[in-house]
Image (tube, rainbow, N blue to C red; front, side):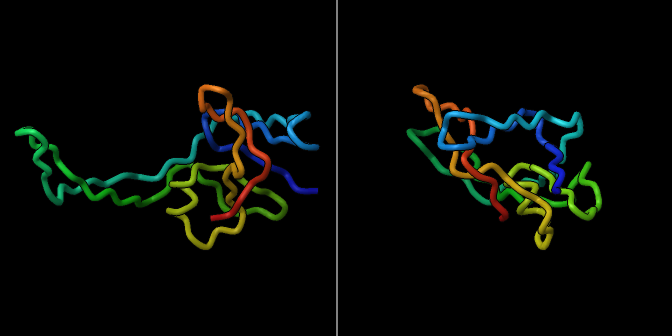
Amino acid sequence: MAKIINLTPHEVNIAIDGNAIFMVIPPSGTVARAATRREQVGVIDIDGIEIPVNRVCYGQVENLPDPADGVFYIVSAIVAQAAPGRQDLLVPDDTIRDSQGRITGARALARI
């Protein structure tokens, strides 16, 4: 049986059997994050106001445990993208939103 560890700061609700029942995966207390580097690549002038345009690059991932047999980690999409080749990283997928557009759950998990 697989074990799932949530490395995000939020609980992840997975809809089981349609939308009726949720499996709640609480945050583990450890948050995996990717280092962010920004480089200004231009400026856009909007009505006389100059707004910087940056290129964002994601680098080294922090707080991501080494792969372990039978263990999967729920992470942000940015962390998953910054760690290509890791088959144990999952992100919430097919999200469910409330009437204000806030994500309340997901119907699946996905690999990036």
